[in-house]
Image 1 (cartoon, one colour):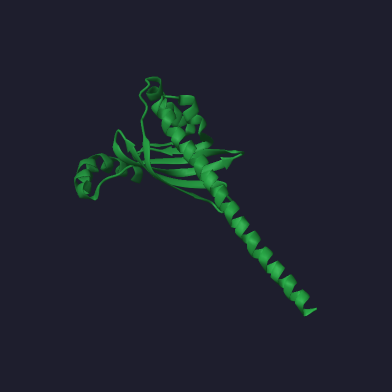
Image 2 (cartoon, rainbow, N blue to C red):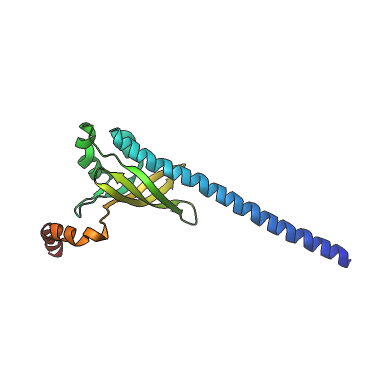
Length: 175
C-alpha cells in the first residue's frame, strides 16, 4: 500500500510540475505573439503617418483615446486630434517617425499594453509612450504621448529659450 501511495504522489508531483512548465511556456508564447501584435500597431502608426494615410492612421486609435503632443497645450481626444492633423495629411506632409528602441509590458489580464520607445523624427530623438487596449481581437491605442528628448548638456539653454513662452502658459493655468 505504501509503494502505491509513493507512486501516486510521484505521478501527481510530476504532473503538477509538467503542467506548470507547459503553462509558463504557453504564457510566454502568448506574450511574445501579443508583443508582435502591439509592435505591428505602432509600426503601422508610423508608416501610415509617413504615407499620409489618414483613415488607417486613425483606425488604430480607440474611439475614446487621447493624444498628447510635444507642446503643453496639445492634449486632444481622437476627434480633436483628427481635426488638428487633417491639414498635414491632406498636404501629404504629416510626420515620419522610426522606432529605434521599444519596450512593451502587459497588464496581468492581458487586456492592456504599455509601451515606450525612442523615435527618430524630424525633431531628432523623441519618445513615444502610451497605452493600448485589446478591444475584441484588435489592439487599439488609448493614449499616445509624444515628447521631445532634451540632452542634459543643453537643458539649461533649452529652459532659457522656453521660459518666456511657458511662463505665459503656467500663468494661464494658475488662473
